Length: 532
Image (tube, rainbow, N blue to C red; front, side):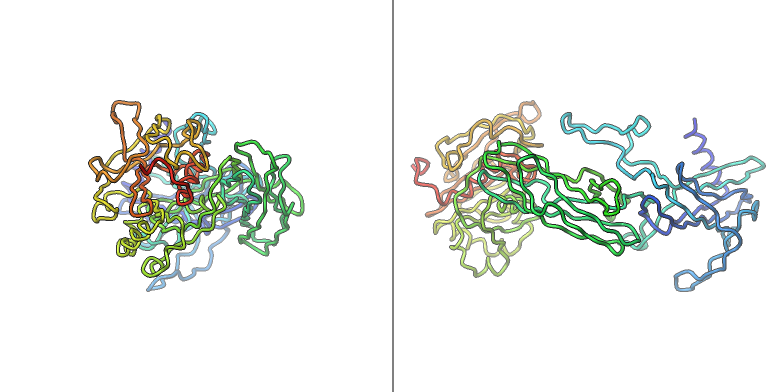
């Protein structure tokens, strides 16, 4: 009923032509701070008597209207017309003016225990769902605004009240170069750990992590930053002091070592920033979600990293990477402890590629890298000379040119069930035998899918499928191949990975790391029966 009444009152305001403009001086505030806001009401062709202008805030906050008429100040713009003077609390009722808005100014104090602008749901990874934080937040994609403007007026003697969010406006690459966002309450400080998943192949220590601290206060402040590890692990330094003279961000590096004999599995590393003058530590990451086409929102999550200890061995290969549209596979290669070189246009055009045992192409590199298309023959020559080239998935841009050593094309095949059984077609192929023997357990714990955009059937017989799979439901029935394909070309190997390692590696899937280590090591494998 309340929602229906609000829509009716809004319709009455539209019929009068009333325009309510509520603007705050800041779009992100912290507890125990203050900001100013103004509410303007412009009249329309139908007369309306404004009886009240106010700002509604949560319990514990304070919103007070500035007393008296403020001096008119010019506003930005080519004509620089002065703003109308602000009205005081005793200046109403007054008729809305269609040419000169009524403007009220307010000071807002944020409560010390103000509710932060968290997302209204929590991720439950055990159930693959989101649970609301409370019943009234069920089904909402964002919390309701905490700061609202309220305008009361009379329509034919009937009292009407409308409410609109108070927004912050700023320059942005959108219509009119202006963007808006609601007033959000963020913590005084937040912390984040990078990378969020760090891999410890057995026997490889230490690993370096970065903890960033964002401070949003106006006054100088000091914090003690630390990284908590499981019992038996070591971290250096044990803590690090950081200081701020005002809003800003700083970073602290830590080295973490797993104990000898640590069991395979995932371990929690938690970051915190404790105020030097006492108080509870800040232990959350605040991620800003900001795009041109949506209003800015914030995601809160624990400031943690997952340390994955896994039994993965890799040969001492020298690896190069050609970046595509964006993935985190290069970081995963580095976490295996391998030297990594990123290849630019000049490297592809005239560099000595023979110094690399393995070259990896990023996701959809043939779309993103014109220089790769131009100099692709140099990569094929590299393979013919004994190199190993791993081509991660591409879409149909791959079909625009003869990028493989023999005729081939990308199709629409995919396996969308991350638990779909995987069939190893050549069990003694070195991709599955060493340095890590790939077993059924390595296909467990995958996320979202097995892979997509597999190579299409009917390729040149020089290509050999190494894997096959089938989704367990009728809408994608039938065995799929083209998932992991190899062609021997000259002395080397050319491989296509429709298999979604690019998705599994950032998720820390152990089997994906073990398989990647094998693929990277192919140039160092002994001759096997797969060449027959």
